Image (cartoon, rainbow, N blue to C red):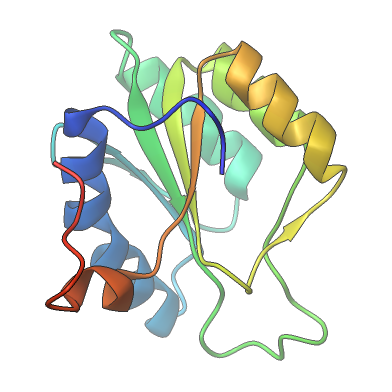
Length: 143
């Protein structure tokens, strides 16, 4: 979604962590997970995404980690839709994150042009990730 694209390391984290994020959602644990070098840094729970971002940033001081945010598989999408905005990007920057992964069609992006511009300025890649797209024989996942 952004001009700034994930690094090879971040793509590996996306492939590693996306299914974990979906599993956490199915188990009603949380809707977000922080990954660095294919290790789980933090899992969102009752504290919410913003606090989890702060915690992940304190645990990964070298930066460049990936936040994967998925929809709650048990929630009514008319009421409980994952939402990000400028504040999310600012918090990711403060926590030295490098990539934000969202499920296409299941996330509200408030002030989308501002969010994408700010993410590019902060060198944070934003990806709409659908793993089924990369399972097709005609398309391969970026490496």
